[in-house]
Image (cartoon, rainbow, N blue to C red; front, top):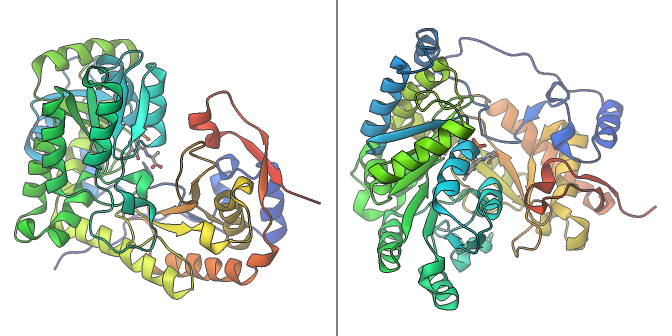
Length: 448
Ligand code: F0G
């Protein structure tokens, strides 16, 4: 048996209700504008918010800060080779930096890019190259109550329809995101990855896996895909990622660090091109925007992420959080994802019309009621896409304990008791790029 004990603590507090009311108003009903000191349980994201292990902190101290040829980079390279199976690594300051490097290299104006579902930064980076992001989730992904094992899968039917519509020449890249963050953190089967590999080969496209949560995905595969019931998490991860031509990675998720990311590939030409672009946007290719110490901690984190004890504790902890919420009467997206539980705000606040952002209204109520911060991933975050009104409660890795999750469940229960009083919201101001408006837009309550 393996577990953890706590070595360092951080004090948190719940501001008084009037203060929370004021904070919400001052934040323009956008919780990205709240100060984290005013948040009691912060489930905004699982990205870069987790606790590092003692082994990672130790690696941090021995990080090599050399501009070129840093030893810490060698450690990262060997961790990526061992854990993910790729020989070449281009580090970046975080996932979206790696997206800029990779998609800036692979895409041009007029291209169309299928992905099981684009995460917001992926969508924005594809669009930023003048290309068109096209989501290809399986139909069941948008059904919060269907209890299927791999609701994160890529729909090959949709992908092939798309190629028929636009022609294969306009589809140079196919992406698969594991787990599928924008589809409630649902996993992708290895079988589906194999089929996407075939699809990419048919149209001569580069197959990219967005591997942010590859270890959590591998755990689901072990639990749910019969062929892999006896395989290790490390072997499953290695096999699944091995079908891709390149992976794009945010170390802030299954790299178990607070910052960092990379592109990895076996393709020497692609590596060279990415390296040149990385020098322009990220830094010299042995640090890529990270401090040497962060590179060193990432090398250790990648290896820890595929340890069975770690990832089982992680994913089962999220599942138990889902159970607490369901017991509190919350309509949750079933089954819970690997890094988060998603609330079905459309069902929870069914009296609010979609154009008044029921998801964002629920996010605001959770803060007002219990100082809990979640994030809307519905029509506010993804304008002009057809998806359920979800609110994500993301669980930072190795950070919160049962009493925090109980507090969140009680908060949700109280909000639901008063649901008829919850008002919808309307936009008061929004930035230019619709793909990223939810980070900075401000809202106000609808009506008197
Ligand atoms: N791809 C996926 C699937 C992601 O979930 C994220 C980040 C990124 C790429 C970009 O990585 O943040 O390191 O630049 N997701 C975070 C989230 C922000 O809250 O889900 P990044």
